[in-house]
View 1 (cartoon, rainbow, N blue to C red):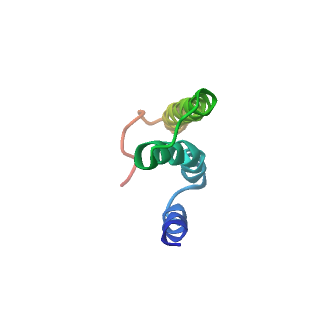
View 2 (view 1 turned 135 degrees about the horizontal axis):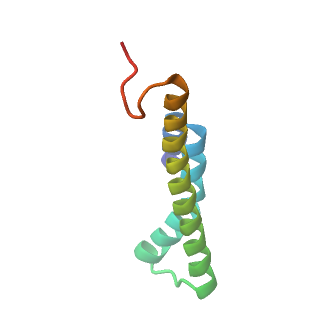
Length: 89
């Protein structure tokens, strides 16, 4: 009962995108715990599925980070400021 409550507290502190990305990793993490802690057998299909989920997460997270950086540069160019320069006064 403690696990779901802690998960909800943690998700409340994240953005929707970060929360969705982390929830997608719930299945691979559960598989990893089952194999390491309980000695469950990991079949080929389940291992491949977990690998695909982790690979999709990595691609999504890296493209999101790249998109955020390029969006910031575009906003800076529209304002006439140098990208990466502080705009606070």
